[in-house]
Amino acid sequence: MTTPQQLHIPVLLDAVIDLLHPEKGERYLDLTAGYGGHAQAVIARIGSANLATLVDRDAFAISQLESLGQQGARLIHSDFLQASQTLASENQQFDMILLDLGVSSPQLDKAERGFSFRLESDLDMRMDQSQDISAATIVNHYSEKELSQIIRNYGEEPSNRAHRIARAIVTRRAKQPIVTTTELADTIAQVLPRRGKIHPATRTFQALRIETNDELGQIERTLPLLIKLLAPGGRLAVISFHSLEDRLVKNFLKEQLNSGLEADLTVLTKHPISGTDDVYNPRARSAKLRAAAKINN
Ligand SMILES: C[S@@+](CC[C@H](N)C(=O)[O-])C[C@H]1O[C@@H](n2cnc3c(N)ncnc32)[C@H](O)[C@@H]1O
Image (tube, rainbow, N blue to C red; front, side):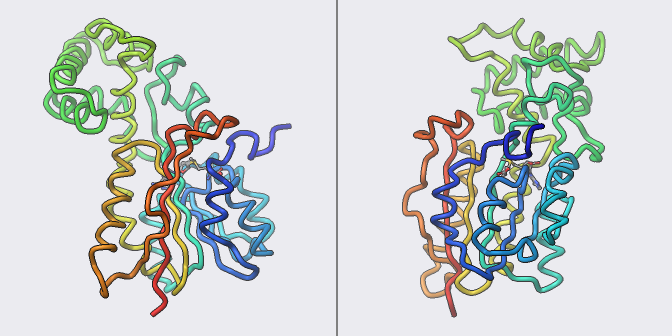
């Protein structure tokens, strides 16, 4: 039988533990608990699952955390913005908060989740499967201009390529809705040549994933709430997987650095810690870890 930890290998685990520096009896909030890899390691150090609050918007991930729930961890099935708002309204505070952003290996590897153009499936990409909007909704209902903007801004495709992809999608869907991952990948491959090893649909799939899950909006609106959720002296660690995510984290921490005496946080990572050297975990290659601590005042 596979354990939750075998489904997803936690990224930069040693560095996260170093920076969060868990001590016996401290309170832990994991806003992207996934398969509990980081959470297990922290709970082992704080000494009790009762001190942990574990959040994920994916029902399958929450089901995999059930054994930690039975040991006393509070499990919250919700997006991290809503969870942070709820916890703040309850005046909860934590000594450590972790955000390990993006998707998990099981989300990417299970064809039926519809995240991968390599695996034939309905075009889904919802992390929370109870959400109404899926990638298929966006592909079949957004205007050509909106599609082009998303592909440019979130896929970081140059404008001319973004326009060509958006035009190809709109032309194809006028004949028949685009319902599967491979139909979309083929539509894009027909208008864009392959560049080296990278499939021409790669960046469009990233863009659709970000839009489907409002990934950047979630991060941008949650980060400021974490100041209230951190106890004095509390540590925050954030792992991001692409430059758009990392930029939001970097700017948030930079604002703190620029706030001088008004700052709530002190930055613990002058430069981000990179996952490039993790030979055991190819998913870690693009990871960047930044951390900060709440000033004790
Ligand atoms: C990279 S995995 C986390 C893996 C986890 N640290 C571990 O060791 O198993 C990211 C998880 O965050 C969840 N997630 C991503 N964005 C989220 C959001 N806005 N709110 C709640 N959960 C989110 C995903 O569903 C996924 O399970």
